[in-house]
Image (cartoon, rainbow over all chains, first blue to last red):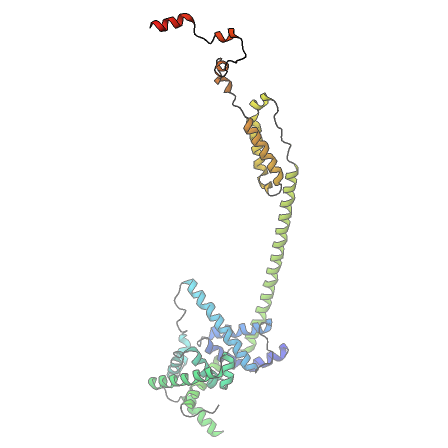
Length: 182
Length: 178
């Protein structure tokens, strides 16, 4: 696949890639943008080569995940060297927080409390509509592990949502209605 | 995947999240162009780094070869060592020759690795000079009786000569009276 062809494919996957990058960067938009840019740079430099052994999307998501992990390590190291203690704090952006609905905020809080693997599995399955085997491929784990993360994550999220009192969202109702119309 | 019950609820929340993310996603072209710009910067910096490394290596080699050449020139210009042969020279010149040889040693220090045999010869010569060295004031310590004290009468000398070592008769009488 030449670079022009790859660019077209990447453009088609851009929104999904950004969503996945956001998940890998704990919903920090600036970090997600930076990670995605680094991924594109890696592709341009030939450091990340798509050989067609898997779907382009799973390959791209795996590259994004790996890059995000590397960047996060660098960030933690920089923070340690600088002597600040913000390394493990979840990112918060007040202007973004205001835009979100209360229910969505609660949902994201519940999601952020899940272990990383469980959160990633749930995101890949529910957000990106990937199968468990594809999610396992992206996360570089066995399908059995992916299934375990999925089940446990789902259970924990359900409990957290019940505790928080999060119900079906406005968008969900809207979506339900629109699909009913269609 | 087919979702049921709570799974549908979770999926609804995720789809709302995806809609929200969609509104804030940056343009693909913007990120792609930035990545392309960064690639050229990385390439340029890599080129600069490689050039600097090559230049540094060349400078290092040149300096080393110049150092080697200067060392060999110095080794070739060592003056011949003058070893004093007369006793006067031995008395008057040892400090000069010692200082000269020590200077030579000092200058020859870096050559140690280059010419070990030559350095060995210098050391032997210096040791020889040191063993033959005499103090200039040693003459003052000599006394006229040194020859008498340091010599014994020989059995082959005549009886008259031997008499001078015997006590006189008067002296023997005096001693006996006392």
